[in-house]
Length: 275
Image (cartoon, rainbow, N blue to C red; front, side, top):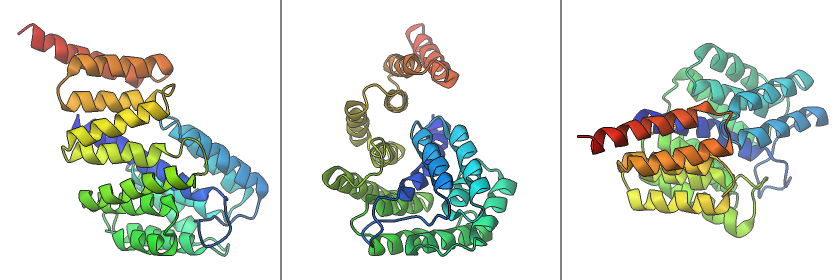
């Protein structure tokens, strides 16, 4: 159970960096990206849309790679790839993309410069505490939910879970009130990850509330039911976990892992009632 939760958090950490990329406002109110090619931006945004299906990250990676072919100095595309490979323990690919991103010739925005510092620190030590960089982003963009999302993940990686929860909660609050998100699914990041931060710290009622809210927002997506299944697994309600994972599978039968999780939950439930 713990392994699955941690793996999923790693996936979402990769996803969250897409959120800062949407070119919604070129003022200092929002985090922005630097581009040299509209085609590269289009490919990048295609990756963004796919990434927010959570389980489609490999496809998103393909789009980021295509974006780099169109614009070899596309910092954020390198950043996405670097973080993806960092959390999938592919050191060679992480270092390759991190170095390429750091060496980009494009003039970067202030937010991108901070994230460039994060790449530098991760190259020195993949367990670097970059919470201070998250605080810099929040100071620069106090009205942008994406800045708080980044802060939350930096704190999470440093195992400062309460500060991570506070940052995710703030991101969720800003996003809903201000509608600052670039796409309809961006609410996945703060709500879902807030739920997992609660789950990993055994704040179970809070986790349940987050996942229930997630389902209310996206009742036709597979991922909220997968998340709720993880919640049921943690509280050992294996029959409910089975139902939730199976519902996720019905929404996307191409993702076999949902079905495998459902079967695991059923086996655990059957082993209890047959004791």
